[in-house]
Length: 130
Image 1 (cartoon, rainbow, N blue to C red):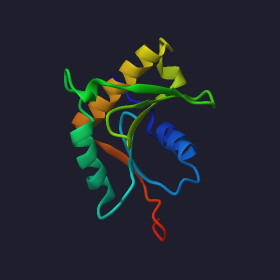
Image 2 (cartoon, rainbow, N blue to C red; image 1 turned 180 degrees about the horizontal axis):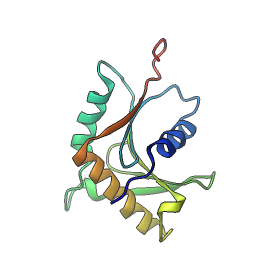
Image 3 (tube, one colour; image 1 turned 180 degrees about the vertical axis):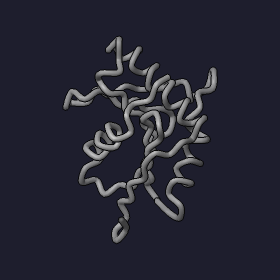
């Protein structure tokens, strides 16, 4: 499965989390882990969360998802069983814009991110950090 352009993903997440002061880590296929209590090595902290909560396991809570349509028309957010793990699906990526199809696409991207664990960007929102 082809990933979304990294710069497009970074720009989208920056807009989504603008002025939130949140620390977040972005993975290759669009999954973002928001670190509510960022400590130490941020990429490693997010990777541990995604390693546990990213992969889809049959007949478990990892298969569940919720689709949130963005008001700006950019696409959707697909949530899962961890409140701080969310996958962005751009409007142009969905051949079928139904929530079921978008949810399955987002869940499959979260599964890829949770298996491959390839960090592409870290945004440190802690005061005094860059």
